[in-house]
Image 1 (cartoon, helix red, strand yellow):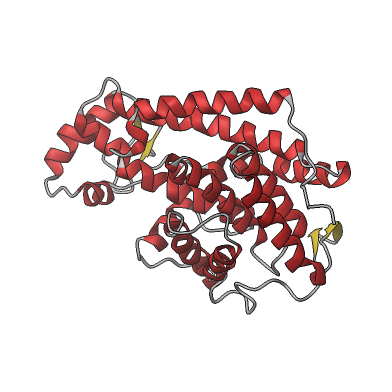
Image 2 (cartoon, rainbow, N blue to C red):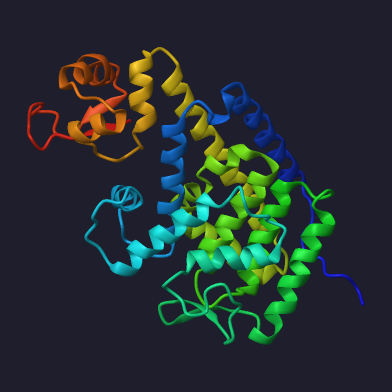
Length: 330
């Protein structure tokens, strides 16, 4: 019997993108792989979780996601709050799991779907389809084939992980996983998590690279690439799409680090590392995040220099002393 091999072929475009990504990873090495920036790492982790869940129609804002993770009270749909808790727990496991182990995949899915899905951690027993409203976009493989197809996929990965570059292998896995649709729920978020897990095994910096946020920005293109692959019978379009997103998000991370490193004081660097993009913060919250007690010290050393440099802006610029004033990192 012929061994299973996912249908795809290497192209010049894939090789060029892979080279660009490797070059940018080298630049991140210069910036110490985020090791010295715990706040930036945490912000990117939260951004990954928020974006991956938002793709699946979770309505919580990134600020609310942060509050759930920090144990603060959030008024929102109970299921969506549980999704955040589960996703955070799963992402905290990313260094512990073996992305080439099928049992670990089931374990992570069990965490992702804890208290949400009765079959959490088990392959689906019924047939599934992907719908856009009432329109059926895709009929998944029959349930009776799922176990064998997933075993074939993991066998292929284990036999080829030293031959196929992880940038390519992770994208192939992502598409094949979506095509098989092995679980009754949570397939998208699990696929995106596992993509990151494979890349993290190759280069630990990917643990804190928010690839999911880049996918969320181009969500329609993401689904279109998947649909095109269904039609073409191979995953080339999706591989290129994912390589493009990884390439772009590395630019953003390098820019984040440069902004926090160049031309500003260590105080401002700490402030910028603590703040996520597009999240409004009050003075009290920022001081709490930085472990500061003195409001005067915070304003003089942290906030005012950041405002003067244009790195942080007020949400109510015409009323700087408003009690409702918030600050956003640019």
